[in-house]
Image 1 (cartoon, rainbow, N blue to C red):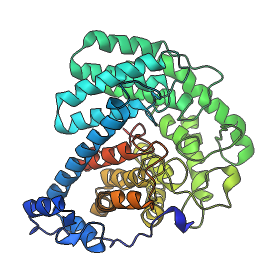
Image 2: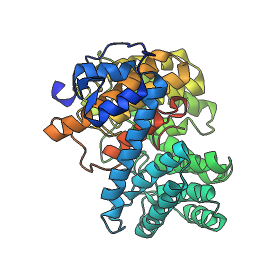
Image 3: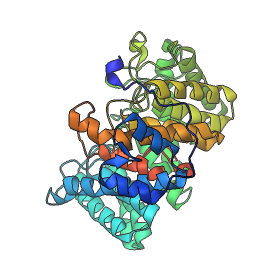
Image 4: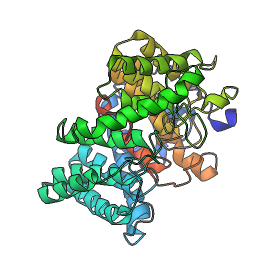
Length: 424
C-alpha cells in the first residue's frame, strides 16, 4: 500500500517567517536553489512552508502560469489546434478550463480569447457525442462555452451554447453517476444556473431527472442496507466519480422532499458507519476488505468533499466530524505518487481547502499549502526520476499537470478555491 504514496514527514504546522525576502527567493530559484538549499531537499521544502503567504502565493501563481504555457504547447499548439479528445477530464476542454481559471486570477483577456478558441474546436469535435456530462461529455463544452462567451461579451455565441445545451437529451440508457451519467448532467445545469441565474435551466427540466436518480437509488438501496445505492457496470461504487458520494453531492444542491433528504442523509450515514477503521472508505460495496485507495475518484478525498457539502446543507456536526476524520487520512496517506486531481496530490489538497473555507481553521489552509509546496518543490524532480507519475494524459486537467496548475492558481485566493467540476 505504501508504494502508492510518499510518507508525509512534513511538520503538522510551520509558522510563517516574515523575514524571508521574495527577491532573494527569486534569485536563488533561478539557479535551482531555494533559500540556499538545493531544491527538492527537506530544507528547501521547509523554507517554502515558512514563507509569508503573500510571497508563497505569488510563487505558486507564477508556477501555475508557467505550467499553463507548457500545457498549451502540448495540448493545443503542437497538435495543429486539432482536438482528438474534447473532454474536460483528459482532453482539450480541460486546457480551456485552466485558461478560464488563469483569466479569473490575472484578468488576462488573451487567456480568455484562447480559451474560447479551444472551446469552439471542442464544440466541433463533440457535436455528435451522446455523453451529456460536464466532465466527460458535451454538456461541459456547451456550459463552459456559454460562460466564457458571457465574459467575452459575445451574446450571440452565448445564446448558441445555451441553445445547444438545451438540445442535449438524457436517455434511459445513461447511468446515474457523475462522470458519464445523470448526476453529471445535473451538475452542468447547476453550473449554468450559478453563472446565469437560477432558472436558466428551469426546475421543470431537472426535476424529472432528480426523481429518476432517487427512484433508481431506492431500488437497490432496500437490499443493500443503505437508503440509496447505484450500479455502474455492475459495481456498486461509493466514490465521487462513479458512486454514492458523487451522486449525493449533486442531489444535495437540488430541492428535495423531506423523505428524499432523509434518504441522502441516511446514505451518507451508512457510508460513515461502514468506513474502514483507518477512517478511509471502500471503493465499492464489494471492496470492503481493501483499504488502499485515497483518491478523489475512490476513497476518503472525494467522500470528504461530499461530507463537507452535507455539513453546509444540513448543518449536522456528524458530517463535519466525518469530513475532518477523512481529512486525517488524506494528510497521512494523500501524498500520492501522481500529480493530478482525480487520483493525485493536487486533488487531495482540495479537501483541506474546502474544510478551511467551511471552518476557517488555519491548520487546514496550512495542509493545503503543504501539499502544494510539496508539488512545487518536488514534483519535477520526482517525475524526472520516474518516482512520480505525471498521469496517463500528462498535460490533462484530471490526470496530469493541468490539475496541478489549477491548484497552484487556486492557492492565490484559497477562500475561493473549488475542486474543478465538483464544488461550487
